[in-house]
Image (tube, rainbow, N blue to C red; front, top):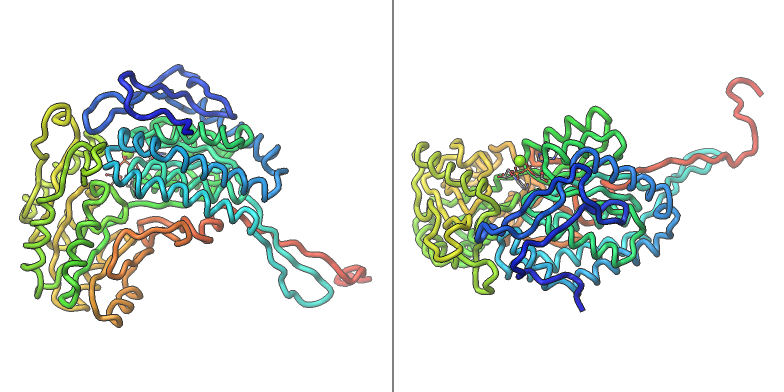
Length: 502
Ligand code: NAI
Ligand code: MG
């Protein structure tokens, strides 16, 4: 039986803050609403956390860290995280519906991509709780030296709206497995599934205060969390612009930081690629999740030799994408998350035209009927005749909009591909195995996909080079972000240190 209430209700849902195991109003009494981006109708009214609430949440997380949570065995901690994974699976249909209602992503993505990966991340890290170990170091002399790998303490985690529940999972699962406590701030656009996760955390039986969830705005709740001297670590996913603000705020307290930021990934098609695979890969690279993906293949590099044929096929397929009601199982693209994001995308279409690029297809919202006329929809869009220096090739648009750039040979390609402030991901389509691996070495990006795109697994690290951030989430690397090493020296000789005389 599922404990999450299904998405379709006529009256808006209501959520309070989740602090110290209790559901409470904001100290200010303020609330904010979150719309369903497919229709603009209010989905939920949510308590709005600000500094005073963040203060309470950080104190609760500190008490939990120093209390029950640190005394719990690793096995019991792992069991709780695993229980949470099971509860997520049991409630996955309802959670997927809510994710779609709050974010606008097609239900086939929420249900078959987001939710399974959310459960997978908690499962994977549940297993790690009992496998976080120190080392013994072969130091010379009558000495024994070993390390303890300890949790950091209270972690502030600020997440974006593009994969709301999945980003919560990437952050919470390793932090909890390593024995930390957390104050999580979901994005103001998509707080709903994080609040439902709070209910499941309670149901799983986590001690009070181990996870606290404080929905609110970045400029208020986010700033309060990132600059709080009582947190030991801040983890952030979102824009590079805000990532820099977070790093500045954290610097004042020397809070440890990990950042997963924007991208402008090159997705590269050589003339020897399997074109059926590559065309589909280009689609996956930019139209998945309405293009609101940090690792989206938003710079499509085509070899001059196959450019025309490729674009004919790509355009035809892009025009066939089914855009509309995201709760319909056959829909392939839903609305953008917000009016703000929609306007930002429209702005980049104007910029593309001014810069001399060609809008090959799309470039405006689709004609939809009924309630969906008020939704934030945009058509799959291809800019051709783009030069790598143009703004549409350098700035993250974060929509279903790709910029097509051509290249002559491999040297020309590598140079252009690396000419960006970002370095999150890259894709290459070729049948030449040596070229593929050469490229993987030469590209400055944290993830490289060869003849595939957007592949993820809880065991595989993800994170950026350059201004795409630092730190690696998922896999064993994520534990580095949530633990610190203590080196312990023990004398085995029983004799005084002779340095200043015996
Ligand atoms: P954002 O970076 O402002 O928001 C992400 C999170 O940070 C949200 O939880 C927000 O409340 C919080 N936040 C905002 N300002 C903050 C501050 N000063 N201190 C602490 N927390 C703060 O992203 P936004 O405004 O929603 O989107 C703008 C652009 O950012 C997008 O168009 C896209 O290019 C990029 N973006 C990238 C994402 C990624 O996965 N790398 C995710 C979301 C946005
Ligand atoms: Mg912002």
